[in-house]
Length: 241
Image 1 (cartoon, one colour):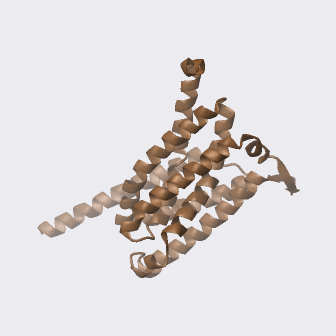
Image 2: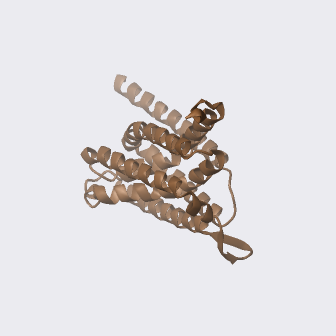
Image 3: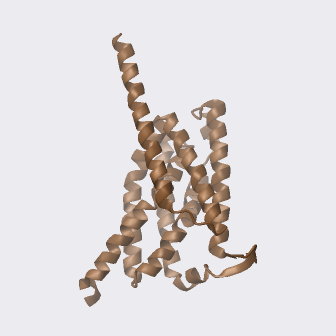
């Protein structure tokens, strides 16, 4: 147990936890969109079960370190780019996000996305499954990074558990906020389109720094917050007048 007194161990734990939380922002957006398809009474259950299943899959990935490192080995080459198992998972996940985003945007444009009929065809099991599968896709990069940064499996698992706890606390308020504001939901769907393109580009060997993506998301969100505040002031002014 002497390794617990090593400051490098605690530095690795803090670094990995922050990394997991920051890179989990896109995952929280996906959870908000997927859970929003359910009736309000079932959304919390779907978010919790989905994240718990995701936690189990992340721990299983970490425990399969040998298999995980082999996932980056090229399987075949197309146009001088070697495609690995990780690349294929990224591409499939990106295509799914593109399809899901376009489908949700179409539904929001056609019926406003608020009709009860839009929520009756989705089950908790389907949403939980999609949340767990998308978490695997989103977590591949961070899990592989964790393997490279930390030498102790306990540190990696602890970081994942701490980050997942933060996501559990953040998923509900973020989901509720997105559902209350249709324009924010449309913005979130646009983010998913962007993330889908980034995943496909990464899978094809064209790496795009996520810092640029997160800055664009933060800037767009800031502008939308100003729009919401301006609309609220207009409504208040109209009521007074």
